[in-house]
Image (tube, rainbow, N blue to C red; front, side, top):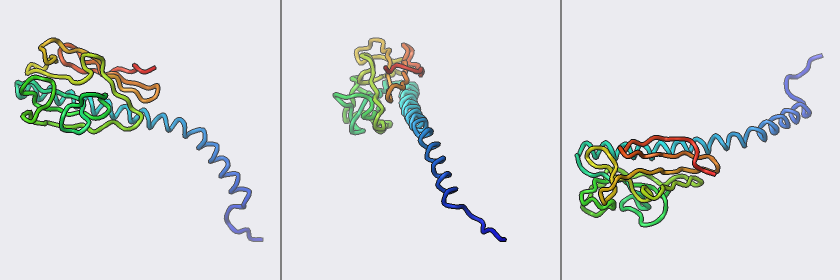
Length: 173
């Protein structure tokens, strides 16, 4: 007797049931992996913008500012860093971009589900002077923390008084 190669209906249904159980177990973990990947990517983009602002300030020996921006052209008057940001040469040292200030770079808004907020000193902008240190528009030292949250996972970008940015885990409840 010759048996044709292939699967019976029962074998196919058992295989599909096992696959469905495995997918049901694995999908929540995969969703967490995607969320963590998005958070890491957004953190890296913002840190890169900070590094760009600092290096351009040193290169031009002038104030360069990174501020949150909804339109990619001018600093936003309200909202968080999750709406996007711009880097510009701050020739008038106001912490806000005018027509005369050359735009260096712009960052897109964060993906849905990621909130980016800064504490009071870095709530609206981070400004670097020609030495690479951060200063407020008034000339005072500017140190602070920008917190990125995706659900209960979080990262914090801590900006020191010398202008150095470092990333640490946590910050979200």
